[in-house]
Amino acid sequence: MNTTGKMFKVTSFGSSHGKALGAIVDGCPANLELSEEDIQKELNKRRPGTSQLTTSRKESDKIEILSGIFEGKTDGTPIAGVVYNTNQKSKDYTSIKDTPRPGHGDFCWMEKYGTYDYRGGGRGSARTTIAHVIGGAIAKKLLATQGIKIISHVVQIGDIMAHSTEVDTLEENISKNSVKCGDLEAAEAMEELILKKKAEGDSVGGIVETIAIGVPAGLGDPIFGKLDGELAKALMEINAVKGVEIGFGFDVSLASASEINDEFYYNEDKEILTKTNSSGGILGGISNGMPIVSRIAVKPTPSISKLQETINLKTEENTTIEIKGRHDPCICPRITAVSESATAILLADHMIRSGFIHPNNLKLNLE
Image (cartoon, rainbow, N blue to C red; front, side, top):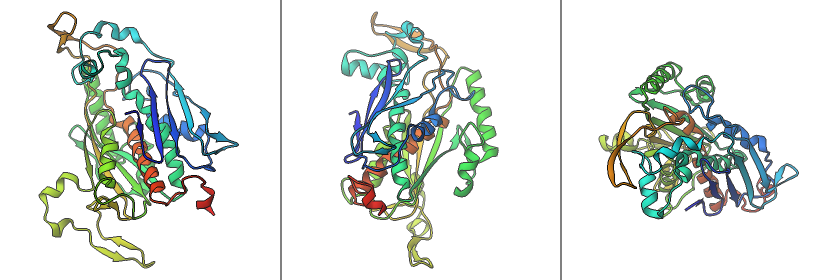
């Protein structure tokens, strides 16, 4: 499948070393103020070649909007956005076209389709997440009209864990380091570990947390279409993600109900809140009005320069492989933009499906 969403739909196209990548966003209501700059700002968060912690592939990832915007606002028609590849080095991959890379989907794609674009992972490359970010940028702008904000940050790299940071200072701290971590002291140690692995020709994984603030109660369905179920699916479909937690996640298995049940109360404005947020903002598959908190486990970049064992599909013999090219020693800093986007796309879709956002004309909401 190349399309996600039921009413707010994002279709992804393109490949790592092809002419271009992009997205078609269908179902965005008319009269949302939107510009190429809005999308470019989000693309810059995942753009390669911005620090020593990312791949050295230099791409501007400049967005070009082909349709769907008229006089600075969405017009209710499909929004097509394209980013052209300008710095491919396909020759780096010709020597390994018959030898599936360990940790990659090369073998699986070949078994399924009988053909495979081996240049940088082709359609299976994390570069295809450009489509996530294009769709996510539009979704975030749409959600902002309803007071919803989404923040992603790195909370762990290897065995280095960040200390909890207040949401009010989270964005400011994230902007001060290349790791995108809210704990500045931990960020420094994380950067040292990433650079150490890079020098060894290796890579390292970590955990990224995403927080959605201002989401109203009532999104999601109680059986199929649970909000946490669909959120887990959206996050799990991001390249390199091998695990998803909502709220306390797997730690709930270590606790008793009296420790993790979120007790309700009325605040001074008679709003219904919970004293804690162990559930991560979702109960019974439906949002409860508290911040929606998720975490993803991101595996180490499988493209490493260390010698690894594999097979040769042409000669049908065992062999070894040494991967060349330009690769991230840690995906976590750049995947924060993608996790924000995946979350935004899902929430925008549910906000429209649940009637919080008018499906055709945003003016009817704003009025």
